[in-house]
Length: 353
Image (tube, rainbow, N blue to C red; front, top):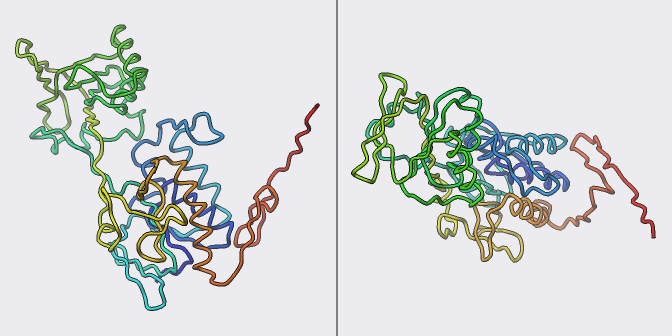
């Protein structure tokens, strides 16, 4: 039995930042995540994708954000149960909880925080009969390391931001990039559409609109694809390629958490955002993309804010009757549970009048 003060379900950016906010309050934390490493979507789906709305960082790669968060929470020495999925939640007579994973690992805590993002993700796969035969052998639904595609022939399918962004990025990495979309108009940002069109004009991207990939060829690894055009007067296009990347989005699922008796609305957990982000089960909180309330914005920034507010209220449940006086980190620094203290740098800004 793993015992902690606060059990966090989900080790994405919001879950990791929760460790920091809880640590400032001397709350011990432990995280559960089905992925083998911390980072959530930022690690698993787009580690090399730039993020632009993190305060203080005009631009930061998703993977680098995770690295920074891990460094930030080091003083608080959180525990991790990785590669295991939280399966059951059972409330005890004293109001605490036992959460058991699919591997049978039990965790005991007075407070549970669900920070599982949008839940577990499954890629939306195109209806190509033999696509399963080539998964991991030329067919991938995520791009984790763009270097895999250096000097390779790549075909991307999709009409949204991910398809456009990766086609633009790989145009300077792969030897050949083809972008296939079943419609003539793309759904992505206008700037990305314009960039892709310019790259197509100079031969850096081969554009196939009003078309879709219908067949894959190869004995063991992928060797070629067939593109069928909506215009019946156009002949099918047979293209030799090393990689086929269909980017049709992801289907989020709450998974076992959906069976915990929580109030669910449109695949998200309803919370009391007017106070503490608590769910309908006392002692269970939900923060980040996994929750919903009127005016909700699904941003990493929002998850960070919710984590800070939630921890203040969770402190009262973990330490009933004990008063906490908030101190700014610029004054108190950051102190870990071993007593070590990292003093914040103090700067005096002088105004010249």
